Length: 386
Image 1 (cartoon, rainbow, N blue to C red):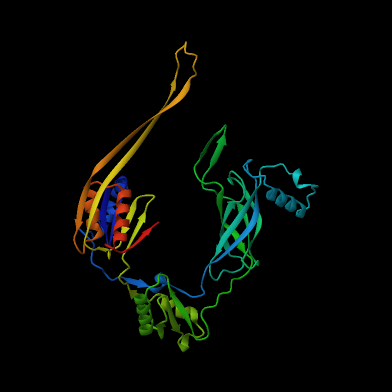
Image 2: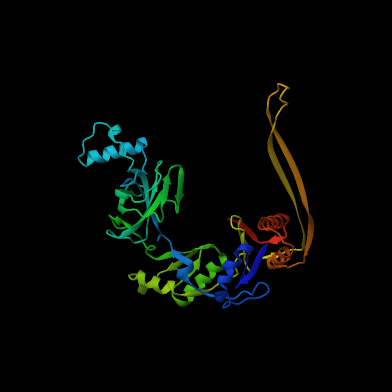
């Protein structure tokens, strides 16, 4: 069974089990405009900083290979880990004749990753993610030894070190185990230190490119017109790029120019008709522009149940036979009567959800019906399954 409601300009259908969750949000939902169907499109003012970014101003990712020590016998003993421990101890002045001399399970080989924000400087702190690489059972309680983090070019960008936070625990004893989180991956908040500055160029000598976060010809043109009217000459070169020329007074003050530009506002546009389906949770989110062409939907179902019972055939005591196992299978087929729903032109998916809810379809049935409507050409929307 489905429970559907209209939230602002979106219709949302969720499994009936989620009613309790929705009920907890009712005090907030009552503050929003509700209606029987989709609400009319209302223009909203959007700041450019919320829908665009400057070309070249980007994140950078770095990675490294390291060792986590101090584990409570939850480490690994892979050959690569033993070699890494051996080399580490030799570099630190330890004396071992052979990697096989290392018998501890308190160490794990890990991959360390981090994301560098634009304009990061030497000495800035980074959050790092540490993930087990071999057969370690848990990184809980471990400490990452100083690890070099490199760019794809091989250049060392940062160093990482510190105690790992896994956000949970994992216990294994006597063949039984219990865990409250995935403990083979953890984080070290502020555990990375930048070793060099990240140089980022803002545009070229004459201007810069402003990139839309979501490609749209109409929005690109509106952004270009807004910047031209209020700040500087600009034109849309494609559906995602707006070329902006620097005014003479801002040639030496690009930060000030961008600060003014990113706080300009532009009216929103009609969004693409789209439906997002999450098959794992049975949740469907429907955009306000979704429409249906005339169609008829027949819904029914067949359930096949196979019940197998194992028994033993025991011969008579004087028959001198052998006991043998016998498998007895019972098959039942249940066919539910079908229901037919007719949809008129310009029907909304809110109408369809309401009609199907009335006859008691399951989440999987509703998802299958949406896919069939899309295949038949009746659903005028993009159907995205996540």
